[in-house]
Image (cartoon, helix red, strand yellow):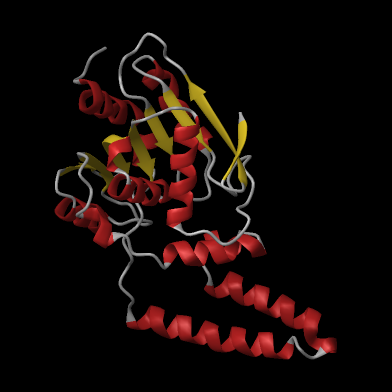
Length: 264
């Protein structure tokens, strides 16, 4: 299904379990992915309750947002989507970027959130190092020079190519892969540190992390465990940022126990 919500058309799906009285489960994917990443979970979860998935704006089959969006905008769109479908409360499974949206929703709209599972969650800003600071400063200097030279008509095209080369050299892979319009959204999102919101989350939160996660290192999971009032952390030894896929059966067993007490 497609629906325009807050000025942006998104793809979403609600797999209804009409016989279950359990709280629906909302699945939130990470940056650069889409709802299909949860294919291995959906059928199992639907045996217990209604399952809701969506492609975030600029992901999968959803449109780009009409302007640069921050986490709040993604969360407000999601809240509106749920309200439009008369869904009052959800349990949430969120991976990576999806955790940013889950944290915002759980802290700002607690009435809509039951239990939360966060795996490899983003939202905590990495501290700057001396090396990263020098690298960022070098990029800013070179990029500023390229933008200045673009004002000279004969140099506009070569300087635009030079600036794109700088982005691929100094920027992250996620940033470099984005359209020009989405890069402003990406910068806005990664600049946000959601750590202050963690203490405002009233919902119980289960954190599941791969010990070898290099995208959102384990120390982020431990920080969330410390800051969220009702949180527990499970570590999958040797797991990566996608530990929930690598150990799909184990992940499902834990989620079933957490949401429904292990009922078959």
